[in-house]
Every structure is written in C-alpha cells, then in structure tokens.
Amino acid sequence: MAKFLKTYKHFLKPFKNVFLLILVVFAVWMLFFDSNSWFIHNELNNDIEDLEQEKEYYKKEIGKDKKEIKKLSSDKGVEKYGREQYHMKKKDEEIYLIEYEDSLKTKKKDE
Image (cartoon, rainbow, N blue to C red; front, top):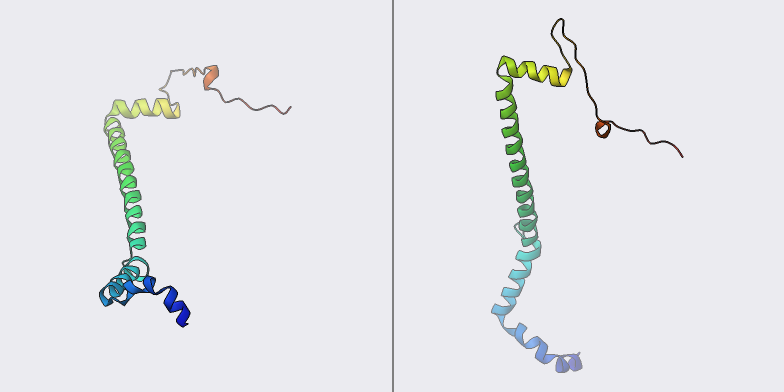
C-alpha cells in the first residue's frame, strides 16, 4: 500500500483539498442522483418541446376547422358540402360523377 501511495501521490494531492473534494461530490450528486438532476431536466425540456410542437399543430387544425365552420354556416355552404361529399341532389336532377384514370385506385394483379 505504501508503494501505491508513493507512486500515485501526485494524483491524490488535489483531493486533499477539502473544498475541491466537496465541490466534486456536489457536482456528481447534482448531475446524477438528485431529483432535479441534469438528466431529468434534459428529459423534461425535450417533453416540453414535443408538447409545444403538438400545441402548434392543434392550433393550425383549429384554424382549419373554424374556416370550415364558417363555410358551413350558410345554406349555400351546407348545400355545396352535401353535394360534394355525399352526392346529394335535388328532385328532378341528375348527377354525373366524372373520374379520371389517375384518380382511380388500381388493384395489383398477381403475377
């Protein structure tokens, strides 16, 4: 043991300073073991960023929905929506659906 201390004495010299030793212990405690550690703060900050992005997405969706509600608030808007989405028609009226080749879904044939 004495030989070990003689050879590595210069490595242990800084740890004889009590203040440095307390600082190292405090830094290790705050980084790894404390309930408010750096790792937990980092994880929580990432969660906050994700939630803020989600919040922006939902704000955009709310804006789109408000526009749709405004369009549907009039009789003409409701009629247009019913004709386009549900293919509704008035009496004595015929509806022709025109579909283009690129809009049709094609089935994959087994080879």
